[in-house]
Image (tube, rainbow, N blue to C red; front, side, top):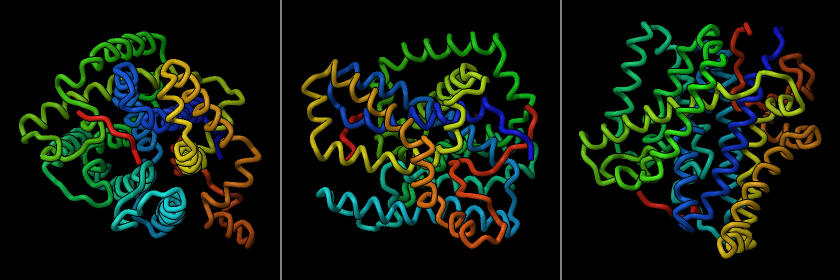
Length: 358
């Protein structure tokens, strides 16, 4: 088996850490214009970058029974288990359960539904010329804004599809191009320009647009909705590529945490919900400057803690119970719990309105 590329592990760990920061920061909204600005800026590009990486690692997916079983074991089963666990945990903290628990993914769990749907569609996109695949993904995203189905986060799944297909169509050679000094310089410029543009996001879009909600929910028709969504897709793509260009390629202690992204992603909501229930975010709102620093620092520390070897040993079997069971059974199917949020391997060589999310 080929060695892991440190760049990918660095990228995955960086992006999942930003996901934890974003989810923690959301509980400070609406607190100040600065909080809203930085939150919007992060959400313009960090999930698009994460989705692109997931797409790249899905290139080997096909509709064989082996791949489909692996998808069920590593994505669908964790979704069912963690959705049930989070519903129960939130119930203990006083939150009412969703009306349809397994049709309404809670908080970050929408991504597992999306990943399963995108992977099942991947062979179809790979079977046609890249320009056709990209055009189809863009059309689905723009016209998908007219679809208002409240279940399984379908609007977000359709809206963010182009980023997955971009990753799916990437090649090792194209990945190498965004790791050059010239790409890094362009990435810095793009990130800085978007930081300025997003400051006035509410004047032409709004935070809810970053969740890729249906156009009618956002008060827009097809033409306006498609124009705004196209702008966000373009900004997201430029910043995602810029951020990925800045990811270091060297191996380090941080790199080794890149195999634990699923543990970080599925474990952090419980800690953040508990912290909110105990008033941590209320304190942070009362102390705006210090509160922001504390929330971001604690979110980063939480992500790193969940990716440490002791956490992996204890939480890995919970994130991949099927793999853990097979390991204990000793049938040779796997050698240990698979904990990547992007469990497929890519071939070497060597991608509105604020509300508290209760």
